[in-house]
Length: 175
Image 1 (cartoon, one colour):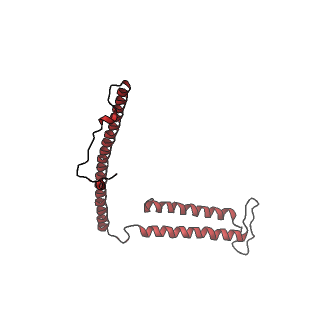
Image 2 (image 1 turned 135 degrees about the horizontal axis):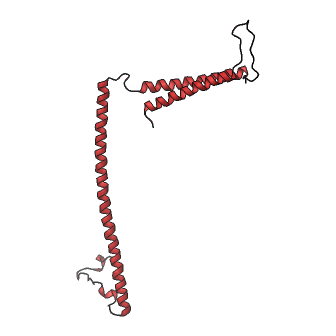
Image 3 (image 1 turned 45 degrees about the horizontal axis):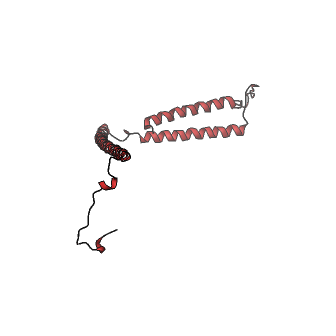
């Protein structure tokens, strides 16, 4: 969204265009009315004269558009700072906003540092995970290769057997 001054400038430009369009319409579509009853009515065979009702309706519509644009401009002007605010109050507000901006920037920098730290940690975890998978595959390939040549024991002999304590009964063993 643009700031209020830019909006105001855009509205003023639009209003000037509306004025020009209205004057252009009046110039090209008006009827030749005499200034007083003693003057003859003028005519121009090249002019495009709009019917009176259409001309008046169009003028009403163009006038309404100009009035609405004027109200919009007045509303924007009223919303501008400085009308009822002293220079010191404006400077105080600017300082306050500047301090807020500095605080937000500090938080942003902290968040970026935290993000970088977390990314580094995640990268380390991924690297550790991938290298663990690679080692596991290498050892499986090595074991598989040795089994094919008959040089290693079956995998089940490598598993450490654990015995239950002697005092356990069947109800304490969980399947």
